[in-house]
Image 1: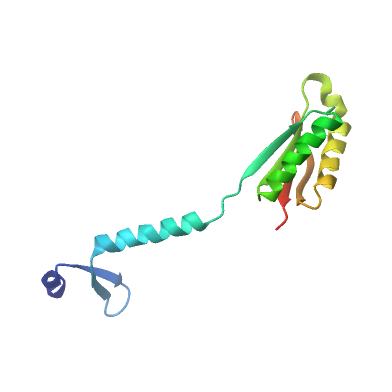
Image 2: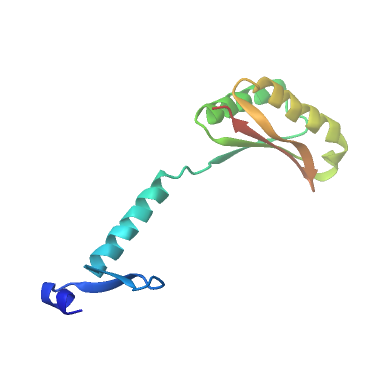
Length: 135
């Protein structure tokens, strides 16, 4: 402690369970600052998963389908995950098969850009499917 006081620094206990306990003379505030800085750098390097959504109706016509498919290709090329869903409103729930066919067609058309992560699944009034980009 005298050595630390003489240098104007802090005495920090590194390993209290060792025999004798291991201590180090350092500037504790500076140590905490550098530790936070290191954690922040690691956090910024971690990749963030972006999910883009594309919404269809059960009776989406060809032009609209092609338009949305182009957007889906762009999203997958950028490395974002794609959540494609068919929204059934009112009595259109009777067209479940059409919605599933539409999503499977989309998966087949986007085969070269991404792979299906989750097959079409009906959740309430939505039938959703996830497509992950190919590396």
